[in-house]
Length: 487
Image (tube, rainbow, N blue to C red; front, side, top):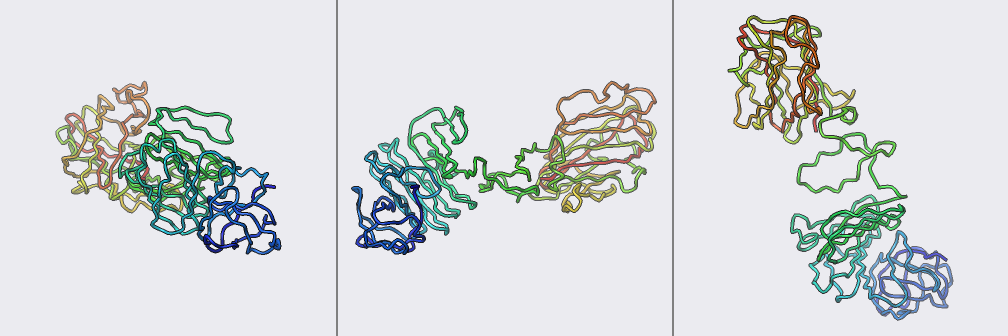
């Protein structure tokens, strides 16, 4: 028969001659029972149906010991495979071999007590209440010993490794079980310089450089095994039916700040496809679909907004044509593109130039002017960007000490022409002349694709795009569009 698993409904003392279990399935007279390290045998007086089971203690050479409520119980026959994989308690080998100590823990704020060197140790965290467990630093004579920590219920247990995982210190000392299903991990102290990864159910393995760890994933037990040099280490994951356990969510997950640990499931789409989003580049539909992509353009369709009179190189960033302030305290803006269509041309200019800046000012540097636009979410029904302020036209600004000039492009070696269109793409691969083979001189209308480097606006930072021309003495007018992602 296959092994059957249940749990204790009440604690068992050293001298007790019966146990109370949650389910009597699998119990019959003469069958073996294992609770923690102890083997028991169902007594002949058992009636075959009750959940109170009379037992004979300390069978198969095991020691009689006390067991806590909710401890895992395994029942089977002598012929069963007592080390078969399953989702319950790891039971070890019934035959003689390497010593193994099995310990059930129910109390919060517990500390692992390492068994003597040369012994393996199984720690079972019982129930669905969170248990905070501390694992002390092992001694060097324990190299090669195994520690298994598993939960037999669904709870976000917290395991703290004194000295840190892999001896890395306090920044890497806490592991939290996920709260989506049973979890656990196996740890070895070994001195190994290459990491070998093997996943059950896949007929292949992959060797990788690493700092002395060995990983083996066992899907049926929700167990991940990690071996790391001279110290305990952990790699925890939940596996089910041969697939990584993941949350289906097209909506944007909760924001997590940099350097903040978060137990978050892998994110997949409705059909199981993994979300692997590039930051601020590539196709923008994924960002729009999660509600993180925003656009705006001048207020009246087909009507330009007047810019600065006589903007020249000496003005630098003090007279931007386009200004964006990121008013969020946590999220960055990733510029996707800016489109400008010239609607009127001022006097005097002999060139058409654009220069790009960003800063980390901690507040807006705009002082006056410009037309403030209404920013819309590309996802109909998506949340508005209530933090960013987009202004276009004769904007006045200051130059903050953190300001960086990212690029300058001369789009025409002559004055601009009405109906010229300039498309600025940010972070596109490659970098070349803006013309795409179209002449930059003359009086013909041109449409230019301009490559700019990635422009990332930090929280409370500013983006500025300035238009200027050599000897320009009059104001141009233009309409514009701008789109960006916000994450």
